[in-house]
Length: 308
Length: 298
Image 1: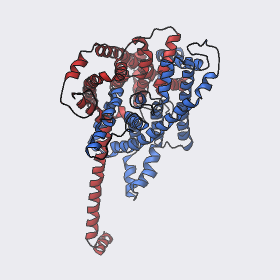
Image 2 (image 1 turned 90 degrees about the horizontal axis):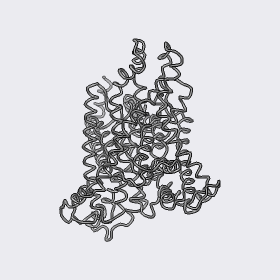
Image 3 (image 1 turned 60 degrees about the vertical axis):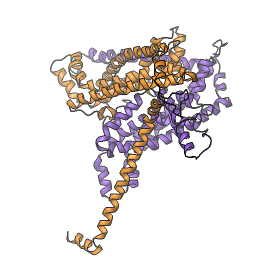
Image 4 (image 1 turned 60 degrees about the horizontal axis):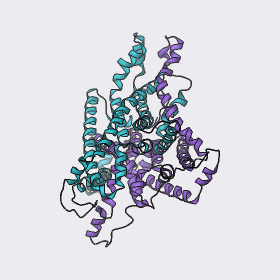
């Protein structure tokens, strides 16, 4: 269904060809996938599993600047300190609000692109892809021209005499982080939703209309059930990078818009507290894992995926 | 038919006409709202960068109003800054080397996972797709620890290695989706007609995958060229372009220069990416394929 995002094999049964090698010797049949996979799996086994493994080990070891590498649970205890818990909660709040705003924009947008814009369909898709290929740091930083003290919004409001002083909550707050995260991840949310919409047979929508369904009924009874799987996939795809985002809080977050990633970066590169840093990283990983698991569980339980 | 005209006659002609007028108005309103929404989205995606480009010409050290007049001095300053050029060169070097490696690894893994049935296929598929759902921050931090534990000196090489790890699974996913859609009988027919396995891949499967490979190349190249967070942890004392931007943004004095170089780089990126997509679209039209397939897999 959804080429750009659904990991193959998780919910798709491929057309593997048992017959392909029917006439070939058994040994060759056995060895061929091994030859193909040696490179990619080897690279991941060393340079992907290795780093995650070492994070796991370090999170249970005494690894500060003076640390000696002895085994301990203190890192996880330290990760539960109020200041980290507070940042974790802030991170969660920012991520959940950003997700909500993002879906509220991305869902209707995907619907419009899939069904309503006619010949603009491909240009709009390419515009989304294009915006994602601009440098993300530049895209984030550019929001300061809009939200900054001397930015577009403040200048317009002051010119209209609606405010005397520049609004101080526009930039370097949770607000600006939410705006920037939403804008940054919009393409990644629209594209899987669009892919899900494309699997809907246009005639189903026409049938709903002919049978007298208004737009709300059509949405509730037809469009949403048919795109629910894509909706959950989108949550997984976007929530994980949002909850671990570093650049947005660093460039427009200020003090109140701090997120967990900033704390982790500081622990590793600033203070050299590798043990606590690893433990916090694992907390973040667990949170991401939980969201993935939950989404697939929901999809599985309710059999919402009627698109196939 | 008779009964319908009776009803019309009964309610009188104004009824249907009013209804018709109402629906036209509603349709107009819907179209206007739709256009307004699309404009809003367009602004969210591109507005800030366009306004940044305008401010890069502003003869002022502040990013914002008042507009004090047009100057190109920030561009002159940016072009004469050696750090910019060396960081750009580093980013290009990494992306140019990482892209073909990712295409190769993505291709071999996609072929293995879609064309063969073997015992561990399920787990291996999940393992190859896993880097796509692990936050880049975590891969970056983990790689830093891994490289320092194994005694590998942080350099552009370590940056490249981590870029391969985060990017080639994307190619695997894109190519697998395309391979599922290909008619499996083509592969089979080639083998039955006496082609060897490598010949089948080279002469039958690969040509059908060219558009997807090209799209993958565009994605991987820009992922690598733009990546900040993974490079940030694995570059050591090297500067890639995003790292240079990030560290320079912390010094207020150099902000106008960042605006200028950001505008230049964005303009180049837009041009290159648009051109690449256009070429790809033409090529796909010629083959009777639709570029939407790559985006949506539909």
